[in-house]
Length: 222
Image (cartoon, rainbow, N blue to C red; front, side, top):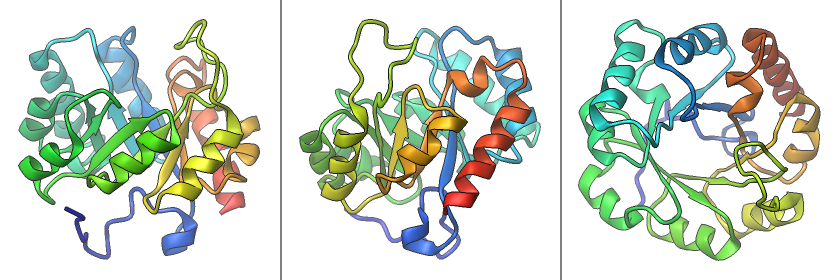
């Protein structure tokens, strides 16, 4: 199934599709506590398009409580929140779902959620990207592009492979892994729709300033 979203659906669109510029997504990490996540989201939300709640070590109830906190405080709308891997939590919150490459089948998830929620997929190869796009993913997240502390000892995929993935599919591709403001120009030369970052914002002593710089770089290149 390929969903046809209304004209206002722009969270994953790159300039080549709508003219609105590249996207900046924030991904949380397992080591981050709820209060820290809320504080960072509050500081960066003017410059970030989407927030991905990735909390692998937490229970469904803990993830739901944090997601509800972000929504009820008005820091995010349901359209700006994505839950990683936990379809039950995403449906309970009424937000998007992001699947790992080895997660639930994309087409089955699409059958369950229909066009009510966006479905994204992490991919690490051209083949995986082609399969996920063919099965109904709205967007892909490719990485890790550069070396990153969150993937110790695992070689990065690099920009050349990112370029191949972007060329192979018709859905937006976000780059993730070791990306900071200085690397954004090189990343965006691949034609990707934007970037997703974790430590560059979640571990920054000044997440507001870091998000502003990244947003400025992306806007200049869009």
